[in-house]
Image (cartoon, rainbow, N blue to C red; front, side, top):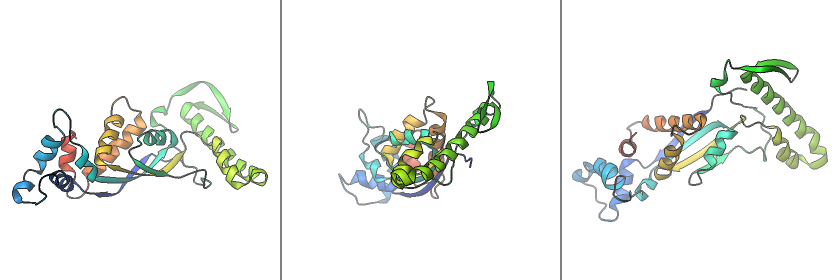
Length: 226
């Protein structure tokens, strides 16, 4: 089943006001109209643009929570951010029955220098080769679980049959960032040098935060130049 990688914002906590209140704990948390008028200045100048070192701790009080459907290669990019909280589908604990997979659109129409036979079908374009290779891997994955189970047990069969799963096989991931950690993530993953797939996921995350009703992270994003 071919699917595009996708992002869904599940929830959020905090927002600019909570972040500001956290910063003001060091002095006085009482909220006044005068303080409300200073929230933008506090977040964009006093905290994030502080010289020489930004004061990022209050931004940890803002939380964003996403459900991401992504290929395994891109999932690895997410895992490299240890400051994020991540849970994902596990082929160790269950058989992945949906056989979701991702195909890169920029491969469409690119011919192979030589055609090749995969899974009984001759293919002449690279995107078709990847799709047929993926389907063969999925077929072998399920057959391997079935045939290995009587010999090594279902748990071990699932653990090892997943070696047939390709890097473009997709997993559903539950990922949560505090806003300080999220800035670290988007700084690295929205960069022009980042891999296209993880860059698209980071961009979708930012866009969905911008679309939250009431724009609760308006000044936080402004502080980051977004």
